[in-house]
Amino acid sequence: MRLPVFNVAKSAFCTCLPKFNINPYLGRCAHGCIYCYAVKFPSFRGSTIPRLKMKDEITQMVKTTKSRWPVMLSDSTDPYQPLEKEFEITRRCLEVLTEKEFPILIVTKSNLVTRDIDLFRKTKTVVSMTITTLREETAKKIEPHAPLPNSRFKALEQIANQGIPIVVRIDPIIPLVNWNIDELEKIVCRSADIGVKQIIASTMKLVKGVSGSLKNEDPTFFNALQNTYSDGEWISGYKYLNRAKRFKILNDLKSIVTKHGLKFATCREGFPQLNNNVCDGSAYCRTPLDKFV
Image (cartoon, rainbow, N blue to C red; front, side, top):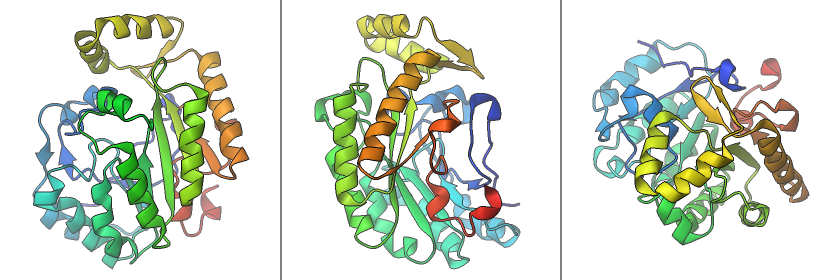
């Protein structure tokens, strides 16, 4: 029983360096984001399931794991689910991991993350927050049960004020919804103002579960989206936006990010030439980084 290694899907352009990954919760994330790709995997469908055994198993996992790669929480179901307030599975995992000084990479869109600042300060930690729009009405439609963007930015600022590195994921960039470059610049500008070190960006990838949900929710929007992706391509079970279209979006965004003095990376896009830092933000918790790159 060891810490699970993150699955690097090279066929889907994944460029992540070696790391571990823990999902304290299974099932569909309670945030209910319309773009959630995790429905592609059976373990992340249905109601949110707290992995209560993890509170005991994490000790043995850490004990039998020799490598000190960063540990990511999490790649599918948000580690700061509303249920985390009650079950504290994420916090228990962090207590054990930080006691042994494992580097930590948090990936979330919840302001509950500030609860664990005391643990983040015990080891090298990076907090990555997903922020796809600053417009509250849009956020309520595409991320209906997640904390609003302003709450997420306030949480990030509180974390940054404690000297903990923070990054922002504009993920996904959804055609016809949040792909306007002026709107994206507003996210970058606010990120720079609070001390964000890096922007990570990715365009929306369609999977079968997402497509069906969108079609039922808003047929008109679904048809428009289908038309936008009509000249795209299927890669490893994901429908990608046309390569030229997505390169332009991401390249324009990189120019803005660079102008504001931040690092930039894409996630699973097939454009490594656009990246000027490690793709997941873990550069700020890896020691030493040189042996990986």
